[in-house]
Image 1 (cartoon, rainbow, N blue to C red):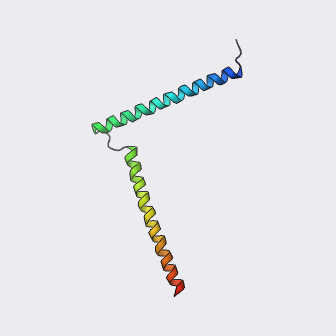
Image 2 (image 1 turned 120 degrees about the horizontal axis):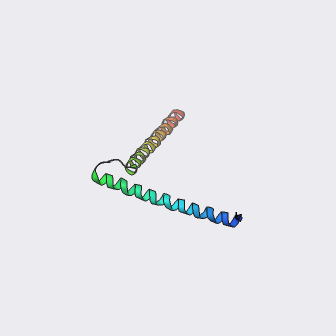
Image 3 (image 1 turned 90 degrees about the horizontal axis):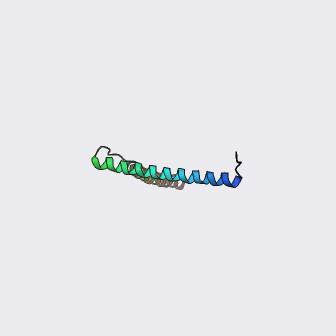
Length: 83
């Protein structure tokens, strides 16, 4: 049995890592294509993108509400301490 050097082992590990990344990238592409196909056919109507957009919109709305409440609180405190 021929012992491998560290450089050979490192090179093999790098090749395995590259192959793994390539497989993962291809798998993600296939999954996206399949999701798009199902959405076009009407089988699946929800996608992560639409759900994320809803959550972002809700977050923006809550941020605005919190800002308005904070401003009103500052106004009320200012009136209380001034008068």
